[in-house]
Structure formats: C-alpha cells, structure tokens
Length: 377
Image (cartoon, rainbow, N blue to C red; front, side, top):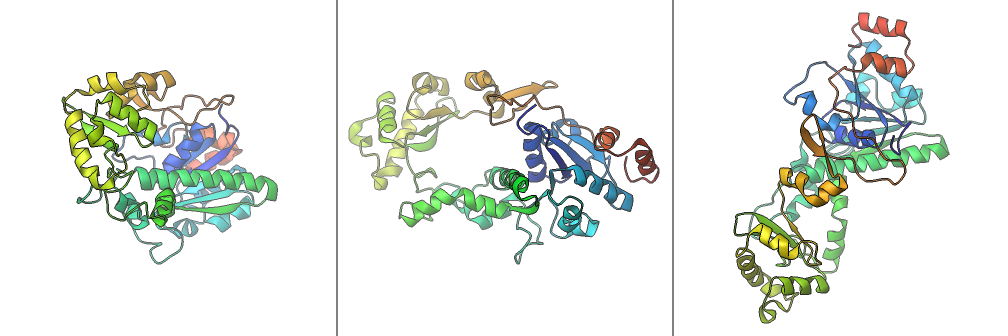
C-alpha cells in the first residue's frame, strides 16, 4: 500500500538522516531493505528505533567479497541505494557509485553527508549543530542579545538532510524512467539547511531582515510572533502577522489600541512584547485556549510531546499512532487514493535475511553458501 508500492530501496545502515530518509520512503510503501553490518545493536533498542519502521533488515558482512557481491545482487533489482558514510568509504568497500551503476545503470544512488562529497571539509567529522552553523541557519535562531539556540537536530539532519535526499532520489528515479540512466544524488546538510533559509535571504536583500538575532519578524523580534508564559507556567504561541489577524489579537486579548495599535512600529516592539507578556501571564494556558483556539489570531498552545498526541485536532487527523503501547508520529503527507499502511514495527538486525534473499531472487542454495561463508547472518 502507498504511492511508492513496488519501489525497491537498499539502505546501507547508518545514523540519523539516512535512516530517516529511508523511513520516509518505507512509510510511502517502498520495500526498503536495511543492510546491517552486524546483528548486534548499541544504545538504542531496535524495538524503539522508529527510524527503521516499515523496513526489512538483513545482516551482511561487507568485509567479505561474498557479502559485497550479495549487496550488488540486491542493487541489480533496486530503484534506489542510499548511504551516509564519509566520502570514499563506499568506494573502498566496492559499493561506490561506479560499482553500482555498472550493475544497474538506472539506479538512483543517494549519498547523505554533512559537508558533501567535494570541498575542503568534505572528509571532516561533524554533526547537525556544525552543519547548520556553517549554513548560516543557526545564526538566525535565538533571542536578542543571547547565543544561538540549536533547534535539536531538526534543521540539519532531518529538514536539510533527509528530506532533501528523499526529494532528490525520487526526482532521479523519475528522470531515469525517461533517460534510462541513473545518477548520484549528493545531499548535504549544509546545502539543505542553507536552502531552507531562502526566504530570509530575500528579505535581507530588501532590507527587511538584519543579521542581528532576535530583532526580526520571524525570530521573536516581533511581539506578535512569539511565545508567552501563562499563569500556570505553561506556554502559548502567537503568530498574528497579517493586519486582520493582529486585529483579532487586539480584540480577544483586550489590548489597548493606544499602546498596541501601530503593529509595525519596530522601535516599540520590545516594549510591546514586555506588556503583552504581562497580559498572557494573567491567565492559564487553558483559559487562553478557551479564548483564542480555533480563531484567526493564529494561536496555539505550546504542547509537550505527550500533550501533542492527545490534542483533539491531532487525534481527529491521526497525526500520531500507537504501536506496542508507545506513541510515534504517523506517516505524512496524506493521499486520497494510495493510502499508506500503518508502518510495521522496527525490525531486529537481520530479522529478514532469509526472506529478503528469497524475495530478491537469491536461491536457497546460494543463500546457504553465503551463510556458511559468514557473508550473511
């Protein structure tokens, strides 16, 4: 089920954005085979490694020629291969782009790195925080006079990395159907995080965005685009940018037009923010929800992970689902006809080795030989 039903994906096991990209494809119905290098697992219990949901797992020893050949046989039948190693690692294993395209000229070969396959820092180690720092995105995030605040690893790993890799891979698959030729998709978290900032660069070019943090329209500089603490120590969010929405904020919060009437008086934003903070501190979060939720103020409570799963709107849409007594986000986006199935639970490493080898055309005799050689487990 799902719009990608019939698509075959080989994921060389890695961390973070690579698995998330492969999860997105699996959520949409692709047959994703995760190639693990060991049946052992580290800190994360496979049962709760939700980035691997909906996939099938095989264990292959990539240090053995028979193991490499096994992956190449899978590549022959795949639409996509994706990996997240440093540049040169896959080539040394004998699974680089040239090796795979020789076996399958139409394959989309996805590479996920922080710094890219080329450039002075291509082989340097790093993490999300470093990549978004170099992209310029991290500099924008934080309050006036304070240090930059890493938005966990959403902007680099998942937004700038995995989503762009998935987009690029599907674009390459579509193009290959016309040209008959595969290609390498070089997705980097720096490139993606920078691209996410495109609107801000346009605003900066017009003089509508300053390099200084926390003084701009969307970075908590404006009093009408901010979070505010409520009387019970919880928080609400306001995004009343357009004049008609700002007018609703003034009306429902009973704000003094003499004080708050000139919305775009940037010089008075700090003063208005302080006064608005006092207004929101006078009521509880639930009281503000009763006043502003489902209105045109552009209001929402700031919910914890547990609270988000219980919110009536999210419940009605099925934004989260429960599996094994635990909650996780549901696949997105939604489709009117090719509706994706509920993802299967994350597999144990090597759980599907026999099943995958058989399904992807490797005979029982050859599979037995691979096991004797220690190439698969």
